[in-house]
Image 1 (cartoon, rainbow, N blue to C red):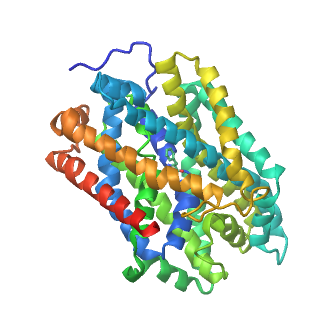
Image 2: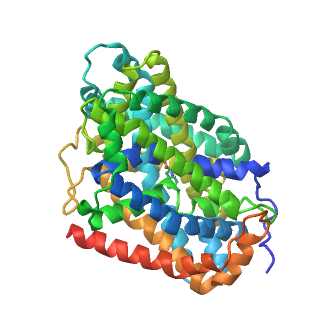
Image 3: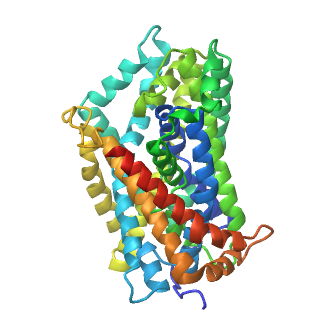
Length: 452
Ligand code: PHE
């Protein structure tokens, strides 16, 4: 079957455009904000190892699957399933992805807003001797208007990039900044691991104790694998749809997974030694990086400078992820509903901002509101539903679709088109047909069983 015609659709402007955009989507708050606190809440090294296994056995095959569904059909997630399996309900999987993107972005903008605010807050944190870093963070999130302002600003930035279009907006934004983030992380690691008492943190991060592993740990690890790689909701179907059959997939997917995992591991090396050396709690939850890293900056020469630069880059990393989330929703409205790009970006930006407000207010006006059974605050609840339920479910259904409906053989042939060097083989079909579905189903089952 030929590639579906879609003549006036944009394509990436250069060969590196796709990989930069996909890496830009993957690398974000998930690596630097969520990965360390998830690892800290789930006991350290044992979580880390399970997460790494999930990346290899589930993350990589699912990533290739989503990219080729997009490239083959040149469509948004809903249209892609409609094109590959016309007259069937499979397009609902794409719809689930669009919905999930909506939910994730609504609270992602809240945390990204914290990061924007910290570009300025970190100045006081690094220049006021004896300041209590936890108090600074709690003071920020429990105030009413300030976090809302930064959340709104972040949504405006995100919608602005999407309105500008795929090549001009997204691609331009991701080209130069990630290397700088990498350099700062290296500097932070060097400072953190040379703090007196850092060894205990390294041991916590690297010496596994599997006795504490429960169904919740496993579910946490796959939720992190999906979230950090931007899988399970159609970002890579959408970004893949701007590729042509000449573009390479299997090797690019390895690079994206490698970069993303590398940055998360580095964030852990910057944070855990500091957590133990400076007397913080690894299980502090979503505030962990906002409390720990300013304390490390305060211990460094030129700390203010590095602090400002760090939160600036973290905000940019969050922006390149957020635009991928909004792009999925926008591409669906543009392709399926005939909306203009600008209208889709603006309308969805506003609605997603409003949907996210309870997550922001959950620390101020709505503080103390927790969800039954989960016993989590509102932001954690958005996060849990999106990442522990919807993303793995989306990845699972897309794997079943490819393995049993589209056909693993067809998918492998599609994936290897344009491949230079590294190609996928029958092993990929085995992973997508058996390993991915069985692992996701079993882990979701034991994880949910543990809750109740
Ligand atoms: N991968 C992004 C991050 O790590 C978050 C994200 C999840 C983006 C799902 C798109 C889709 O921050």
